[in-house]
Image 1 (cartoon, rainbow, N blue to C red):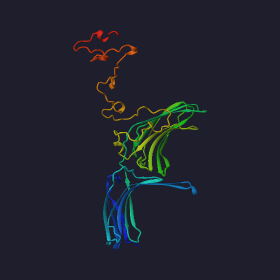
Image 2: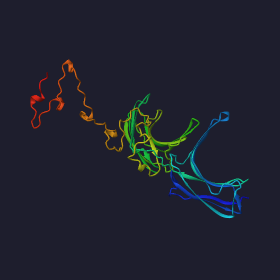
Image 3: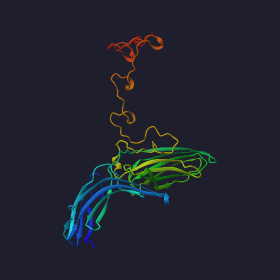
Image 4: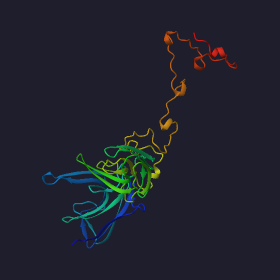
Length: 401
């Protein structure tokens, strides 16, 4: 019978959500009770972060497994001196304190899915000669600070579909979403304008999706889950309707995950028309779900790797995207139109800041001799009038040579 009783590990929570991030210091205690004097070979506590994926495909002889692993860090602290002969601990209660600082780096948040997980863990283990080790583990809720710069903006998209066969006519839909960044529990609004010039009935639908991709051995396993859905009223043939919806992102929604090599999580809002016996026209808007409070810190930062709605995102639209995105764009000092850098204005430049065209030497237009250019020219190359004296009519409009 083991002399070790109530082997446990506790740590101090850093906040009410009990989350940890890069650079945080975790302090805690390993506690246990010994029923008698015991020789301990090793007593260590570790903190580590790992990502793993695993799935199988096929059956029988064609069954194949896919695995991948990434380690982000591992720290270890010995609570007693490690000695092959062992360290004798007296009978009674024992308390060993420890302290770790999580390293900095681009590490993903905690995640658990069907075919993979990202786990940050505290582990304490006691080893004795010729005995099974005693251990305890505690998962840490790691929330990454590695949020790429995101710009909050409105998204727009459109689709135009010609009906064929017996269902003649045309269907047009334009949709807008009020934001591209949200948090679990946050509110998102969408509006769709539908012009049904066909002979078919149709229903507008909105759905929020979560797409998880697992990577291993140059293969992928994709999971696409609908988190929320709304169905609008039927739109009759040859009619126009405007349909709006407002929904709350599920509080247990997984954060968007882009900084893990073997697991990625994306979200998108799909706005589409359900038409019987026809391909449903649809517009897809990507959404970035970030930890609560993080979205409020993003406006004003440079746009990051997340595309904005129909502007470069898969919209399944026959229309080209608008020339310029819609949304609150901060314009940096000294920038030109639409936030692009203003061109440098060289000294002696011409109209609108462009360099003045050089005056060629030699024959002029149509072979006539070029008019001489005075050393100090005025407007349009004509001689400048003396100061304090208005130019005469003839000096400005002299007949051509």
